[in-house]
Amino acid sequence: MPGSVHIIGAGLLGASIGLRLRQLGTKVYLEDASPAAQALARDLGAGRIADEEALDESCVSFVVVATPPDVVAEVVRAALERFPHAVVIDVASVKERVLDEITDHPQARRYVGSHPMAGRERSGAIAADADLFIGRPWVIVPSSVSEESAVEAVRAFALDMGGLPIQMQARAHDRAVALVSHMPQLMSSLVAGALRASDPEALELAGQGLRDVTRIAHSDSALWASIVAGNAQAVVAVLRPLSEELTRLISALEPGVEDPFAHGVLAGVSRVVARGNEGVVKIPGKHGGAAQRYSEVFVLVPDRPGELGRLFTEIGEIGVNIEDLQLEHSVAQKFGRAMVSVDPVQASHLAEALEARGWQVIVEGREKRMNLVIAIDGPSGSGKSTVARAVATKLGLAYLDTGAMYRAAAWWCKRHDVVWEDEAAVARLVRDMSLDMPITPEEQTIMCNGEEITQVIRTSEISLTVPIVARNLAVRAELRKRQREIIAAQPRGIVVEGRDITTVVAPDAKVRALITASEEARLRRRALDVRGEASEGAMEATRKEVVDRDKSDATVSQFLTAPEGVSLIDSSDLSIEETVEAVIALIPKEAM
Image (cartoon, rainbow, N blue to C red):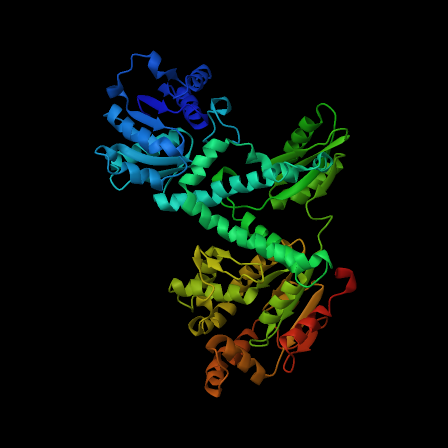
């Protein structure tokens, strides 16, 4: 911990840093262009005002610049000259432009850029909190000339603040914060801005959803103007695709003005929501850990003193940890609603235990789950993947290509030069594989351990290794488990295709279909898909991939004949559209 710290800028971040340092017993000096701001930070206990002390600037060992981004570089350069022995950092949310303006300074080796990923919708020292940085990422962005000792000092400082140090390049940082900080702020402000001329009666209907989206809209407009302008290039790169998505959604909705069920309306909306589902699960969980999907248990809480405390006490007695909590309560209502987020494994147990104690409980999704599962199986080249995607798109459902999961597993094992005969090693690799499977039918980008593999897993080289992986019973068990988890997580429904789907993975699906075709038709389709032509040579070259793969998979999976309860669709002489309609015709009316 530095012997003394000089903080320039006594707003939210500067004052919060001061409060934390004072808790640790560090001597803190405050400086701000606004006498009122520095006096307020002093009165809150964040440190002493530098002008009121006989300060020897040569004795200061650490300087924190917490000014707005548009003046940070100027203040840092001045601090490097004023404090000749100090490590100087800034905490601005834009880094590349700041570093560009400082690196040529003769003392730039003592400067290290940084950015604690913490804040509030309220600004100023009045909102300061000594615990603001606990568990939050603290990005460290050295310049090309920063001394290693200075970087280490900043890393130690971040840890003292309770933060989690992460070192990044300036450009990578700016792109990242444009996505996770600047874009959400602008979206929240845009939504809130749309409410300015709203009918008061309409706003009386506002629920927690609107409050959640607009929570950060009550922010300092001048500060955010400086932040966003300083990172304009990265922000534009994030906003442009959003603008295109919004335009696409409006186009999809326009036919619904005359007919709510016009072609493309439901699919257009479903696509947006499904993409949101895919994105939200990637947000890191509590304490900055890995993303985790919690289950929500809704409890009606009587509007009486002590009832909320009783709920917390009884949840503790039941032995369930609360991961997150949200409360909703409307004026004149006799009940409030507590949304308790818990580990999915504990949700049912908690609900049952609370109900036994007299609480009114609803587990998320039970009351509204549509759960339309369409399972499609079939041999290679039967067209099941194309048909399944088309069905999902037409009905606005999620889509899962389980065959791609086996291809990803084969690619992952090949990447690690596994000995294929060592089945235990193959299974171990697959269990450790991080695989992000897309569920939006129109956008199939597959990520494996952070690397996009969408195209590489479709090569002939991978196709020839897939049967080895697919014959491994431990691998099949692992991938079936993952497939069932994905299916269960889709509230509206899903079209899922691949081996074992109709008989093992989803035997209770409302629709189970086996799509087959003649060998010639299947060879022709796969040759077109893989080699771009259906010539005699291309079809013969494809034969081993198709016929041999089916023979191999048939040793561990039944997909060449339709079992009882599974509908057979021969697509040999059917177009894609006709096959799609044949599948949709199998859906029971009550499931639509």
